Image 1 (tube, helix red, strand yellow):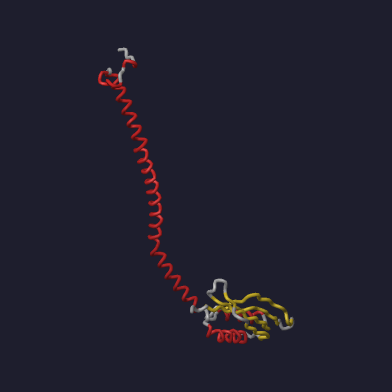
Image 2 (cartoon, rainbow, N blue to C red):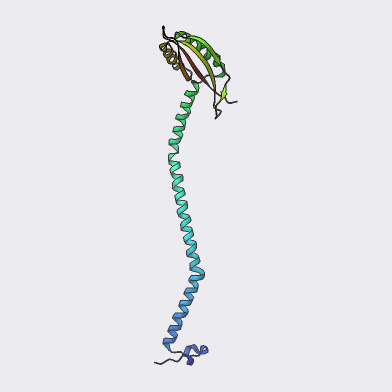
Length: 195
């Protein structure tokens, strides 16, 4: 069967040979499908892809939040333990009213340890960097032997309140009886009460 394209009349498609009609229908269907894909299905597929990406992001976010939610009871329990520990630590810091008594206790401890106090100079309070506590340095120059000083440091560390020793230096005062001049800075820490 020989088909001449010039014999085909667009106004009379019904008389075209069957193979030409079939090819024309297939071409029209493919063009229709292509246009349908291009203008409708492609847009829907892009939306679907975005929705799937969004779903994955939301699922990952959900998993992170779920992990946080699962760890919340443990964190609440940990916070309770921290608050309890903090309250215990606060009790070991003197209040403003107890500072004078603590200074007196430190000087009495030095004397009871067998040390002679040459200088006992409490200085002004200094605010800590975070503002939670204040420290009060006390410059001490003591005379005694090494063991007396060891007893003093031990007894101060056993006090109910926190007192630390800084910049400790020893100088031989008398070689015959092993006397030392001991210079140290004791620091008392006080919790800053909330107003």
